[in-house]
Structure formats: structure tokens, C-alpha cells
Image (cartoon, rainbow over all chains, first blue to last red; front, side, top):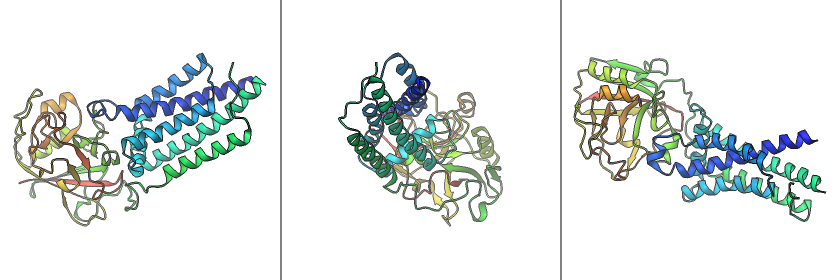
Length: 138
Length: 234
């Protein structure tokens, strides 16, 4: 039981770190000078690595709320950058995921599917983690 | 200690999760991305017609008689929505993922190919040059892909915020291209590293924000589609 909770905790923070890194990467890529010189997608990988480090040092309050916010923040940042153009937002997010995962030959559609899957997984993991945490408190 | 989840009932939680998932699926699933609805072509298949000799495996073809150089490239859909100054870049160069078209031929072979068809490089730019247009032989650059059924001028597949017509020149810059290894084959403003670049915009026009370039999503095929680019000395 304890081990299962720890796995959930690490997975949750990796996923939240992924989305946080993705938001930062999308925002940094708007600085064109930087975007054309550096792979800003690396922030995604950094988020995935730093997320669990942060999570193991500090307990996460309201995991479902935080996890959902992280996912919504990506969609919000994407829509803000593309001024509400959903098709452009999909391309932007897919391209950033592709660069962040160092898979330049992956199609944008596949990269976008990965984002969609990870978004849903994040909310599911956050919900399960929330329940496990609530049970522990009881 | 982890705090208990704050919603009063599990029912509310389930409603929230369902709503969030629906939102993600709706936002990610609708909108019909710019890369949809176009021909889904095999990336390994060369463009139709007379370009059949150019392929992923044979990405650079020189025709000395016709004075043309053909390069195999693939579309990078990212630059339909993000600005760039890179038109065509070798995929393994340091700027390999920063261009509208990703080339499979490297910039040094491309330079030699232009020399083979007797094009004369300008070599007038330094790394510190600002506001200087590139010189060298003028090149007629056209593109085609399976389903296009014709050669399109390069200017039709790239949008320029200033609407200036493209003036592609053989800039040369062989040593800089080797030293920097950016992979740059065609830059959209005058460039001291790119083998060819656009004299319609002097150096640093993009960096200073005077011009913005995007792939034309209304003309170009979807992300990953092979595109054959032909350079011809005018």
C-alpha cells in the first residue's frame, strides 16, 4: 500500500512537471530570438525531472486541483498565444511536445495524441492520488 | 501529511473530472488542424513527375545541363503558426528543426552542387554585417510535391509580413557554413551563414523585427510531406 502510494506520488509529480514544463516552453518560445537558438522544448524534460524532486521534498495539497490546473494551463497558454485559434494551438502544442521529447521525425498528429493521452492520464492519476491521500488522512 | 481532498462528496469530484476530460477532448479534438484534410502522403515517396530521381535516400540531384539543383525536403508544420527566419535547413544541422522545410541534403554538399552548375557566390557578408543585402547569382527557386501537379515559386509557400517579393541569391559563405554547422541552405533574410538567402531583406531584418516569415498553411501540404525544391541559376 505504501509502495503504491509512492509510485502514484512520483507519477503524479512527473505528469504535473511535464505540463508545467510545457507551459514554460510555450511561453519561452514566444521570445523568437531564444526560440531560434535553443530547443525550448527541453523545459518539458526539465519539468519531468524536477517535478518528482519537488514532490518528494514537499507534500502536494489538493492534487486533483493542481493536476487539473496544470493541464488547463497548457490549453490556456496555447489559446492565449494563438489568440483563440484552436487549430493553431494544436499545432503549437504538438510541435513543442515533439521537440521536448527529442523526436523530430514524429508527426504532429502523433505528438498531439501523446499530449491528449498524458492530459487525461494526469487527471486520472491526480484523482486516484487524491483519494489515496484522503483515505490516509481518515 | 497530505491534506484530504476538499470537495464534500465523491459525486462532485466525479462531475469535475468528467467535465475536465470532456474539455480536453473537445479542445484537442476539434478545430480540424491546419495539417488536416490534405493528401496523406508517404514520407518516403518522392514527388510526382519529373522529380522522381530525388528522394529521401538521394536527397541532392545536380543537372548540369539544365543548371538546376534539386533538394529533397519535408514540411515542418510548426512554422505555420510560429515565425522563423529559416527557409530550408539540413535536418542534422544545429538549426535542423527551426526551418519551414527540413532538408535531407547537407549544406556543404549543396554549396558544391551550386558551384557545379557554375553559380557564382557573393561572399559579401560578415558575421557582423547589419543592414547589408546578400549578393551573388540570382536563383530561381521553385517547389513541388505529390499532388501539387506544378512547380510553385518559393514565394508562394512562405508568407512575408512586408509582402516583398523574394530575391534569392547564392550568398556562398562556405567557411561560415562549415564552422557553424547550422545546416542553413536557404535563409529568409540576408545571412552570412546560409548558402543562399533573400536579398529582399538585408541582414538582421528578422532579428530587428522588421520582417516575420511563416510557412503558408493555405498552400503547403501537411507536416512531414516530402517537398522537392529546385534551384536554377537565372
